[in-house]
Image (cartoon, rainbow, N blue to C red; front, top):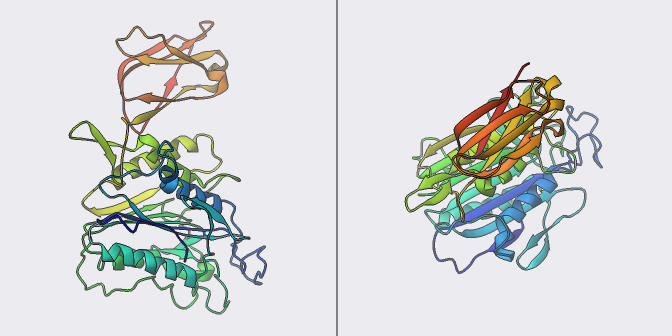
Length: 389
C-alpha cells in the first residue's frame, strides 16, 4: 500500500480516499508474462493517467489553494491511498513532493483497502471514496481485475474481487459513514470466465444478515450493465474525465445561505451530462449508471457559484457552412456572443440564469430562430437548433 497523504491533526471525521489505476497486466495479451489464453483481454492505456489526474484533483489545493480540486470544510481531506499498476513504478505529486507508489496486485489492493477501511471505520461519520480504473467484467455483479489476474491460469478469478459484495460489507461495518465507489471499468460479461468454477471474493466479507450501519452509499459506474467503457489514447478515461469536469463547478445544488454543494446525485447527473456531450464526437457511445441509498450528503462544497456548460448545435449538416449560433444574458444590453457553425458546435462556460439563444444564417439561407428567456442551469444546457430554408 502507499499512503501519499494523511492528516494526523484533523481531529474530526474527514474524507478518506483510495485510488487504484491498473493498465499493465503481465499475464494478459502483450504482457511481459502473457498466458496462452487471455480471454481477449490485454493492456490498457488510460488508467495510470486517470489515477494520477484523480490524485491531482484531490490534493491540488493542498499544494496551492488557487488550484482547482477537492474542497469540503465539513469533511476535509483526511487521507489518500494510491496504487498504480503500470509498466514502471509511477510517482504522484504530493504536498511533500513526488512520491513513488506501489503496484496493484491483489495482495497490494487488499492491503491498501484494509488501511483505507480502517480509517473510515475508526472515525464514525467519515466519508470514504474508492476510485478504480482498470479491467472489469460483470455477470450482474461487478468484478474488478487486479494486476496479477491469471497469475495461476487454473484459477482465473483468483486475482479479482467482487465490487458489489465489498460495498455491501462496508455498509455493515462503517458506522454513520458515507461510502462512495467510483468504478471506471467495463461491465460486459466474459463467457469464457463465467463458466469457470468459483467467483471472485470481495475485499471484505461480512454476513448479509448483519445490520447496515452506514448512513449513505453510492455506486457510480462508468457504463451500463453489459457494456464497455472507453478512453482516448493519452488522456484520462472518458468516465474519469467526466467526473473531473463535473467537480469543476458544474455539479451543484443550492443550499441555504447562498451556498452550493454536490452529493452523489449531482455528481451522477453532471457526469452523465458530460458523457452525453462527449458522445457527439466519440466513436463509441457511453453512459454511466448510478445506485445510491441513505442521506445525500455533500461530497464537495463549492467555493464559488456553479458554472453551466452551454452546448449549442445546428442541424441539418448542409446548413452548417452558413449558420451562426449566439447567446446573451436576457434583458441586458450585452452584445451577443457569436459562433460560426462551420467550426463545430458551440461550447461555452456561463453563469446560471436567463439567456437569449439564437441561430441565424449569414446569407439568409434559413429563417432565424430565437429562444428568449431560456433558464440555463447546471450542469449542462444542451440544445440543437433545427433549421430549414
